[in-house]
Image 1 (cartoon, one colour):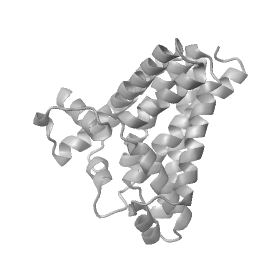
Image 2 (cartoon, helix red, strand yellow):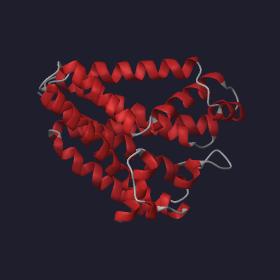
Image 3 (cartoon, helix red, strand yellow):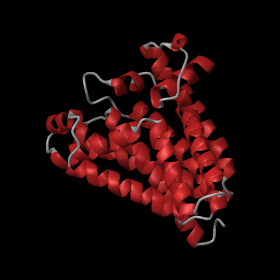
Image 4 (tube, helix red, strand yellow):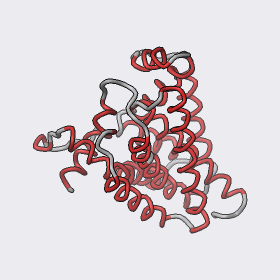
Length: 251
């Protein structure tokens, strides 16, 4: 279990992992059970950055640096998937054309706008929360965002003949989903119960609608699709927190 957690760390972040943890396709697939735990690690790191800097910087500055930390520590892995997905779905009308655009390393108008709106959304929504809530939602949102990979991989076939996402998708089973879900549920204890009862359905809805869209357009999904759902879930949860604050469900 420790070995597969380290493989998950290696796959999703730029954190150093001992070379002895070189992985096979099966190992990478089974390591998905620990993707939400990687989310705890990334979100926890971002939360520590925020809490530490909030004492010496204005709250918006601390929020921005926490967002930057999470992007840097993950090498912009999921943000890249979001940009590629928006370029592909925005510029392609057929499955083959969408996949071709997604594979292009250059970023287009749709991808650029998606990233701008994404960062603005994260920054604005988080900065509008009380500091006592920001660190909690950073951890929960990063955990939930990585959980979305599990049901999507179990539900949808891989749309390409090859790719990194295929290594993950074909190995996800009931055990991985159960382990990942337990991690998410435990992390949600950081939130008031009212917030948890809203945050979990929001996570499920973003995953469901994303999956339905990918199935309609690609008859499956790709690694970029997983990254896009990850980022959409994260920002949707920050917006959820802001709405809950507006109606006094969190303080």
